[in-house]
Image (cartoon, rainbow, N blue to C red; front, side):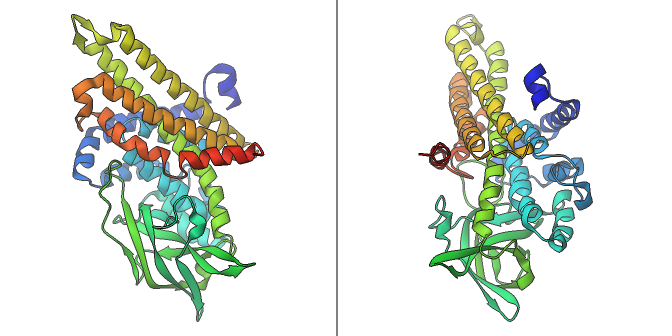
Length: 386
């Protein structure tokens, strides 16, 4: 990103990717966004289109069926999708960051060869089962268990709020479970559960405030048996490894949030030029112009924050603090911009067929999922030595 800081322009391959995804978002995603939101239906045709474009394989090497890109490329795609439909954007983000990335980061070669080509193709989705009813931010409070029995892990327990876990193309759920104790503390490991597997159930989908076209389910594990070799990474390192995944994921969520924030700006600029009140376009009134200007400033600052975090990550430098800052700033920008956009649109902003209304409902979860704002503040404080 040094070229961007020097010239204000991204390298050509990044610019071309962003333009391609933007065109797809406007021509394919936007026209059906309101329909899927209203029907609470999963956009299989849109996901198939993203798969054909190779978006699910963006950050993975070609040897595993990926596009040979990097995490920043994924973030650019998420920003463009987030401008028009957060449900579609989170489907991609979760499919890559939570579904496939743990296998890439921590899987052995056999696991990578078995799962990554399928997940990177986008023809199948993976999910990560971490959160439980009594353990959200406190994920270390995991109660789901996995015990070895005759060369198999036997998993019992439940998970909550798991994205991409119940679609017709979901083929893998990686689950964290207590596999023993070490030094008086729970030993939490990650285990690959192919879908379908006897005893595994994706319970009925949630009725959510937003992200209505995103697939989200509670999961049940009732004596689910999988081979011992389905352990992902080192035994007892499942929770620690997933914290690394969350650090990366926060940059991706920040990018999605920036897309939402910018999408609200773009819609308001268009509307402020068209809508007239008291004989003039409302954008000519300082009250509206200043509100949109502040929205643009929020989006710009948030974009700079996630660019910075992504640059540190790609350079192999510590990025935990930068990722938390980006996630917090961007999610708050998305929520604040959605609120202002709804106000600018007036009564129309309260109608679900308008994208700003969907952003208003969708954006709140950005301040909660993959680490609440309070968790980000805690992490930033720790990095400061407090």
